[in-house]
Amino acid sequence: MKIRGIFITGTDTGVGKTYVGAGLAAAMRENGIEIGVMKPAETGCLLRKGVLVPRDALQLMKAGGGDDPLDLVNPYRFRVALAPAIAAARAGKKIEIRRIISAYRTLARKHPFMIVEGAGGIMVPLTTRRNYLDLAGVLDLPVLVVARPGLGTINHTLLTVMALRSRGVRIAGIVINHQSKKRPGLAERTGPQYIERLSGVPVIGHVINGQRDFLAIMRRLVTLK
Image (cartoon, rainbow, N blue to C red; front, side):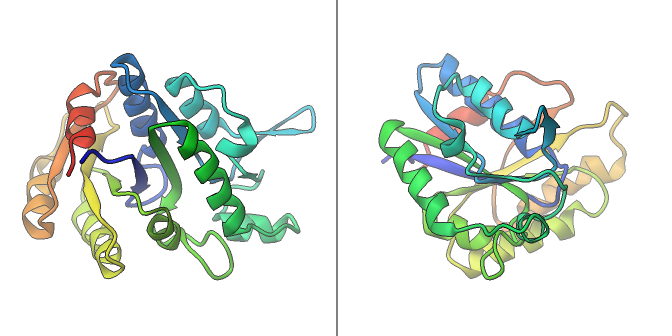
């Protein structure tokens, strides 16, 4: 039985979730897999002519080639770059989980495969009472963890895996995103193998700076059982 989508989280903010998500979306589209994308809440949006522009959500939409309404793909957007729950409070607004779930279900009925991207890490607060771990559980999608390769990544990744397992959330795998153009040091060369060994979760791919070929990672994901 093939999975119907993935939920992408990171070990922290800025690890490259959107880059990986967009790369996978493009690979799937180019290989005949009709997909939908979703970024439930985005902060740090640009303000252009009085309109907030969610760059991550738009990047995902462009990669996936979809024409779904932006308010379904990205129900909540805020200008200040903070956790969604905090950004919403500062804007005098309230994020409602049921609105996100409704948007997801609408998109999932249209698309056989969904890519949903969180914000920051899995414990980032989405509302005053719920975080992205709660949302991943409700959507019932396997989670793909995007991690850095450098020093500190073992701890961050193992904590993320532990949090997911504490709720019984299925983990699709780990992708190591090498964003730096510098030659990998000892931590970058050894960390990923220890992450896989200590967590028991497979590292299903390494994304090298500027990489555009996500076919191998895509194949690992769409054949999960």
